[in-house]
Length: 239
Length: 234
Image (cartoon, rainbow over all chains, first blue to last red; front, side, top):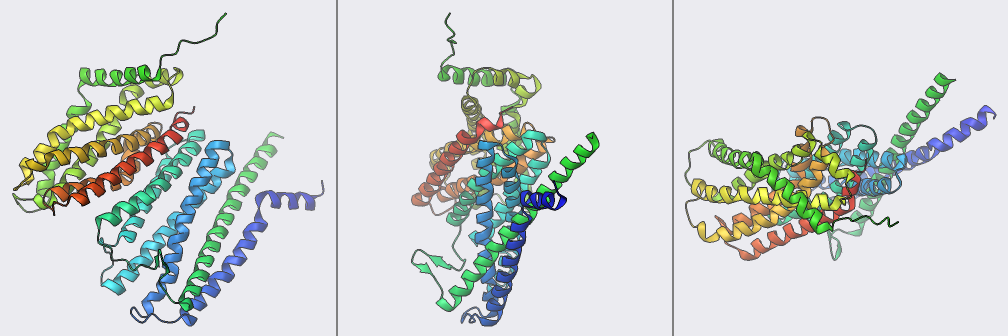
């Protein structure tokens, strides 16, 4: 087989093109969202400039939940099919989900300091929930690193499912236990903001979603490349 | 020639497995005695941990009780597979035609029994040590929420102890896995206790926490049913 055809086939298996496309989409959307949030969106009459953090804070929070949902679904698919790619998707989604959850805590703390004068508010159920979520998913990697071989994949998949079930339980338990001080952005009646803000929030949400997919694709490419390289090394050694 | 295997019914299998755990515990008395002692030591440390010698910690009854019970649960759940692990009993059970879900149910019921025995000591001791006010009238309500929470602890604990069983440094892994998942149970248990002792005596709040715990137990039961086969799928 000609080498250019082999290269093309390898690239297709590894999925580098999808990662590149999503990388470009994410870069464009994050740039547009940043410009819109900081330069175009109207300033909130009550909270002032600090309110602008909400565009990213809420978007990151929602996307982190999407990441954990993806990890859970990939975990279920792994247990059903035992295909390695689902484990790759699950572990990568958890990794990005934790990163986003930590960002939620950091941006939430900044917002708390500006709004309530303190970095941490135990009465804020969502901030506390995200702390618990980070603790739950941090244990995922402790578990993963302390089991070997086939069990590592199985146990990771099981824990990704259990972790996702624990998220709403943690949120609800913290919420019923404490007075509700968090600003309510979305109610059952719809978004609690004017359209001039809503549009930038939706663009930020799309940007964060695209960033998640791009990071997922890049990480998956890395994992597939590493596996392909290992297989090639083994083949060369045995020949 | 008939190939039918005379397999015992699942109820007999379940009863046999529970009997095995309880008989082992009655002979050695290792787990429950250790759990009770650990709980009393923890409660004593709690008093000193506050930094002030206050006789009346009624306001904190729920927190004191449920933090103690959560740590005690970690100890009990961690011990639940020790006999199987050390004597290779687990290998025997896994090759026998016992459905994994029966194994889960047996372990969970054993943990509920261990926790209930521990609470028979812990709940009165909390009242004697920390509460200076009406407590004994509410003890039935505390016992009820403890019983529901025990089911939650047992279901999630059995799943996590099954996972931790095959890990390196398993004694360290179990609390890291188990305690974050237990946070909602601690919040609801402490909230329900506070609702009837040292708090507003609000029964609707108490009911809300109990219903939450029932929801937690149902969700974890479903997760256990869906995933427990995969834990021992070797």
